[in-house]
Length: 548
Image 1 (cartoon, rainbow, N blue to C red):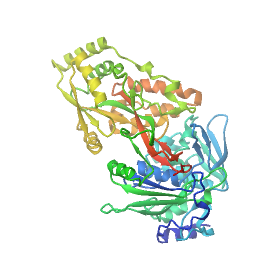
Image 2 (tube, rainbow, N blue to C red):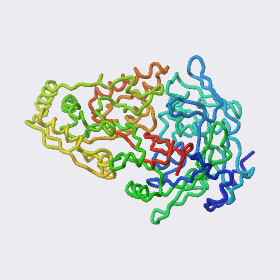
Image 3 (tube, rainbow, N blue to C red):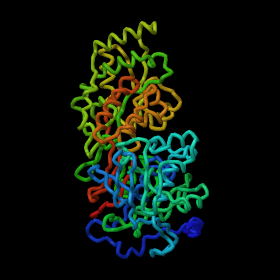
Image 4 (cartoon, rainbow, N blue to C red):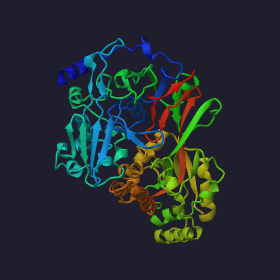
């Protein structure tokens, strides 16, 4: 039994931060062994992988935990804490065989030695408990719907079964079996996400409701562990300090930096100032202008689809014919010549950064199949709508835009075309991110340019946004495209399934895609292999190298 040891770890006081005594971790001259200065925009809400969803939490969790499988640099799914896995002939049973050298580690000492009572193996039951937590409705995990393909998940969500009735079983410490209700070609992708990272039940119970909320209520099974986490909302010098997790480094899972030291900042402007002052090696942003590519590495991924949504309570713009008229008269060709590395015209729902079979889904299924540009039909629809609504013209309204997401001059180009072709006057109101979010939440808008970004790199995650976001639920008008994707049986079916579900959403004319927009990682040139996930917002430092 390990319970007594775990309880002792939870109750021990937090240790002081130290950067001395690196020993073999001293910089080797090959880019390894660096102490990375980093920043987080906002304090992590939680370091509980089954619950957290904000970018700050995602970054720390990515560097703190590891799962059975992961995606490599090409987007292919490879083993991590599993030695191998098998799938039954009917596609409904997955058997994972675990490595015997992945450990939970909790830090009790101020020195740099690892004591035997500070680590113990990660076992199959830890994955069972984690997935039960995700699917337990009392947990209110934001990832519950993602894993609804697991056997008996519907009964558990309805309260008919306890979470122990799920099709998840530890045959022994090194064998995990997961049964599905039906074949799901997306399942292995789901298993790469943080929600599928392990959780030790004894430790979870020992934290007495504090799991993931402070540096005494977390353990690591990944590349780094948290040595100190301090945050005072009214003070300065807020930090989260991580050290290399030596017990989990092996020949197949090398950890190159020695430390990652995060300062916790309030705003992106503060983060940019840290980068300017060389207090951080990199940062992420939606706007990359002003950074010289000769001095900085600027890497962008088009992971966001910006589209128009309409307030369902608006007496004019809730009209389906008016929405369709706007969609059919959106002249995206007018954007030709604009910066295609930052934005490009969007005809589909799924952005180019979503991968399928290690390639961009948009390479496999062109979004031009959804091009419905037709001014004549748009004019007819608008005339019909005016007649039905008994109005002679449409009042001027403003499209609300998050100015931190996109330069609204791109939208002005399309707005001018709507005015010229249909006589619809759509102004633009630039807002801060907080103002934009408040207006959306309060329903204080007629039309909004909404940034659609999935919670992980998958078409399934894109469609899930239409059943979890209130404003996108209205755009979907009762469709559940995610359910159709989950039931897709084979990888070869996915591209066709994605395309069919995109069309089903677009035919509602509640979400009109206009732009694919890039998110960026900006780093100093002396860094290599800092991995940015534009969907979760996480930065992975495990194999990062610094040659300064």
